[in-house]
Length: 87
Image 1 (cartoon, rainbow, N blue to C red):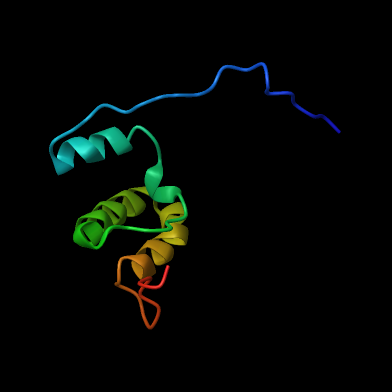
Image 2: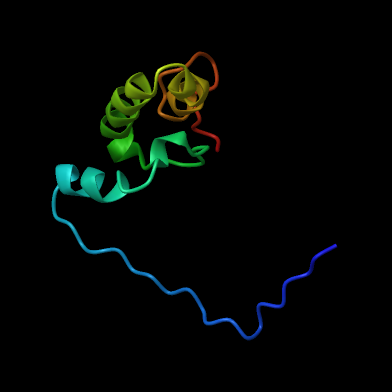
């Protein structure tokens, strides 16, 4: 078993740039495949915009995108009985 000693490693302290528009925020997030992550929470004011962005990215991913779309669908209030409000 390999154990890593991280006590001597420098702390990771990266900050993203500040943006002032939704397209700029998406461009910043699109540096990473954020839509493939398991969603835990989306602010209610942004659910529609986030879901639209996820759908377009998942469609571009083809079959791989369909696997995560249902989780976003529920969290953004687009899915059946469990709309993600209690998460």
